[in-house]
Length: 357
Ligand SMILES: *Cc1c(COP(=O)(O)O)cnc(C)c1O
Image (cartoon, rainbow, N blue to C red):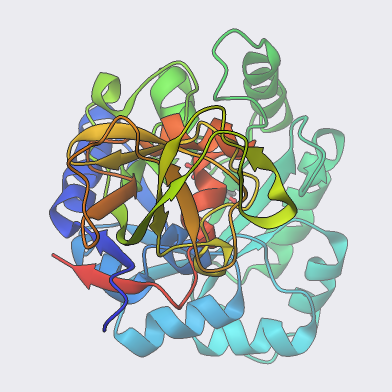
């Protein structure tokens, strides 16, 4: 028997979402973020729907190699910048553009062997305090970089900490810090991730950097993909492999953590944390069966989950369960596992079969 634990990837949805970004930011070039294997959707699948991207962005050199290996000849950006000189030279060889966020990378530039043919992205920390030159040092970093860049363009960039929350004043403060720090500096600018694109039109600038929205997931707690005009690209399914009876007072699953409050039909689904379904999903986490929600009961195991089927008298072994995606938004599922959708999609493991359509 084949295990029908499947993630379907809808490339038309990715393409649609890309077009939605174009619509929202018609005057910006689009940097499509495809790090973490295209947010768990499989870069090898997804990039064919993103061939109109102005730039693709990844987080690691391995990911950059994969992009080039699969045949992406366009602009490619490493968001974190190189960690050491060997990596730096390797990236130049792959014709990858780099983020320069630290003095150590200026040193690599001073000692480089390869010619720089591509723009450099100067990252300025405007308040997130993760990567970037402090805003107060931006002018000096720019001066040094322009001495080293050998005629290639410098793109000014920063990253938002709170753009998913339009009520948080942090994002406007970050934009003000950016504008003050880069005053008089020539060069295009790039600030917005998906949430910035949606919530802060003034942050769109010359390059936008959408990630999550390309996959049809809302970056904002208070907005659904429908509200924003996005179509989810991933759906996750498994089969019901058993249906059992349990009496009131009997327990279900590891730790005997769930006690049946009444006589119950318990369905067993063929998916678990070994497939990337979150182990912390609580009792009550919704799954979809025959178009209707059912609830998880008991702990998630490595290979299986258990479901309350009392509301589904017609359920049969072999029926398909939807864990998220079509008919069951991942935005609704994630909070039940104290997770965010980003985490769930990136967590789907290689044991799951991918079907691309
Ligand atoms: C991941 C990432 C993005 C994309 O963020 P989303 O929230 O997925 O749109 C943009 N810029 C940088 C620097 C990133 O690391």
